[in-house]
Length: 468
Image 1 (cartoon, rainbow, N blue to C red):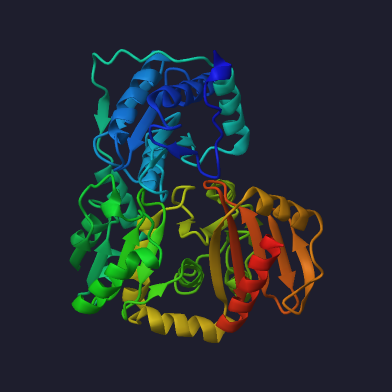
Image 2 (cartoon, rainbow, N blue to C red):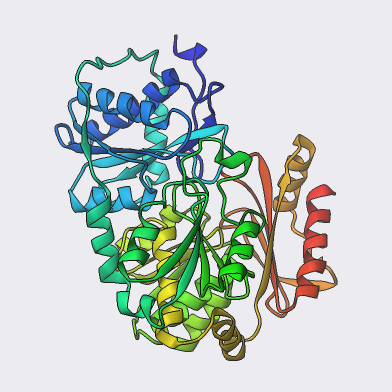
């Protein structure tokens, strides 16, 4: 009976759950069947659906079964011949005019998780109005029979066309200028065979970490943040690399270390790449950022006379702006970006290559470019803290949203933004955002100010607001 089956809810980016707990073959069959039926309701029966998978435990088995389910529901289904980055699958959906695609991935979540990301025919993450319909179909659905597996699914090679497309977005000659060495950290994920393949074809020298497939991610996290890239930092110094470049498990997020091996925050990378796009490259058009992302993008937009749009957290909202032709650049502080003419999905491989291109084209180190940015728009320093959210703290967060304070850390609250969570913009331009995670049972605290000292003070104040 439907009532005895697990309820399934899509978060900020698809559905994710713990393997063998909630993420089971039985539940995955329900999700895939519901997606197929929503596509059929929208008149896409008989069309192509692409299925991908990352390097997690049993991901390719789930993908093969999904292909069988789509075929049973009246679709032509093809499965990637290898673990595939989420942005690569998005590109292939658009290139082949598919009805949509699903990727079996839990992105940056811990190894015990698996998930399903559903992209619509435009290559963008499905919007809430679509995922709500999928949830409704799942809720009304009983158990789904295992599809006939006698015939192996048709496969597709995701590599060559995607790499060719990157060559249209990134100058190979600039990437290779000066004969650089790059250190790469694949985080045991899907960027292996993509990021390195492009850089090798450009003639760059490379050294690599964590390139093999490992569903346990070396006992580490598939994220590509500062604490995960300690090894990459050391590799940059040992090899005297121009940059250290990394992606997370499904390659939609980027991680960058500068020539000194220092991790560079995603917010700083977003500002540098946007500045390069509208400054050196002369592109003109708007920029979109999530509510949690640096206001350095606002300052640059004002400097170059282009509009800046704020969205809720979730790259699907930025993707909407890209599809509508309103922006040339979109970014999220969680290390995601895309540009005009590319997929409406965040792409960590593209991001890494744009940073490599920027350094090669300008002949400057990332440190020098960062110093130039501060001189142009002033300092923007930021921090993010993830806190486990107890039921009591969840109630406290609700009270905070209902009755925001008038002062924080001795500064007057000039504006309250409730587009996603609660954002307190203080006099002078510094700000705090507190929101529940859409993918994990956490409260996320975001802070931005003009100095590290003020960031630290505001972070303490934000923690107190959640705990009160």
